[in-house]
Image (cartoon, rainbow, N blue to C red; front, side, top):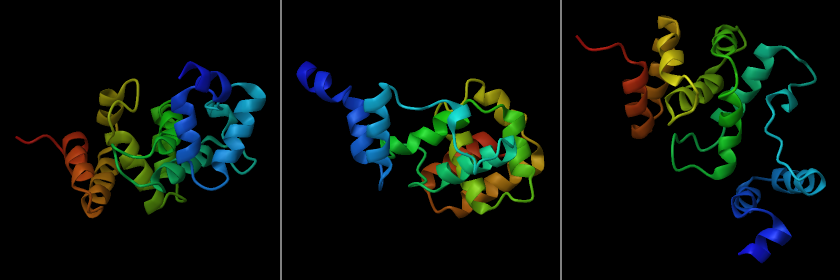
Amino acid sequence: MAAYEAGYGPLPLIWWFTDADGDLDVTTHEAYMATGTVVTDWDCVPASGDSDPVERVLALLDWYGSGSGRCSGYPVHEGVPGELLGRVPIADLIAALADPRAEERHDAGAVRHLVGWKTRPRQRRDVAGLPEPLRDRLLAHARRSGDSDKQGRAERWLAPPRA
């Protein structure tokens, strides 16, 4: 195994490359071979050439919502936008979801991110601080998803406490 890793890099990274879709695996592997690192810096995420935080968050939410949609047991490469979203201040996430450009696909990414397992350093506080209309909207999205795991997680994280 050490010889394999010496020639090709850490095994989890290799699995990520082989699981990635399309040209992403080739591009990422070339970048890794050139730099020795996988880009996970929030500031490096392309945002259509714009540095608008709302647009950047919407791009990440769209990316995260476009994968399998599962909150667990998903391909390794689908975790990348989730890792980046975990670094986004919750105020920026809320602002992006309140933006008129936010659509169902962004809600899909937000639900997956906010109700997933240990997705944010202060997840409990962040989710508790969501405005009630946004919580209701995301909960409704999860209920329509047809994914019983996501529905259960959303009920635990987003539904109002029962009296």
